[in-house]
Length: 150
Image (tube, rainbow, N blue to C red; front, top):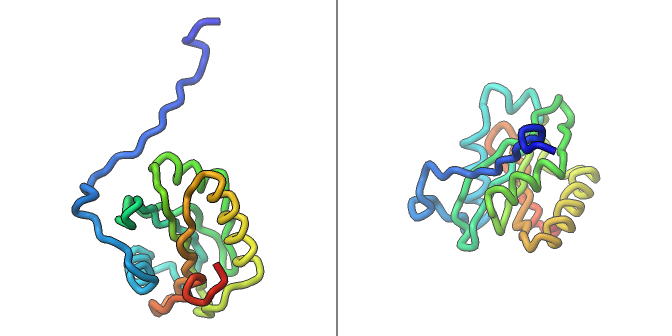
């Protein structure tokens, strides 16, 4: 078989900002504030979306990736794509985040189950899920870690 008949797969991660210049996440307030700043303020109260904050072993931000945008009451999270991004960026820690257009900050049972599923998969790859933060349109947030459910 000729190599011209096989698809080439490239995996890349490009740093536009040196990690030495990247902010450090010290607590949920740092993460909540930073994540809210990245949300599209025109759609945060209309559509739920899911992002992952990618961190190195010093909790310096490697990047933020928006995994999905959904409807008013939910968004689909493909765990395979999530881990493709985590592994591609060689991240060792992550903070999961999604918005609640309703402004209600309490996690649903589905939110808790998804977090547990991701946490279990992350352990297999020696990646730490440090938190899952729900963001409200007014900038308020709910931290799974702070509330003891991570």
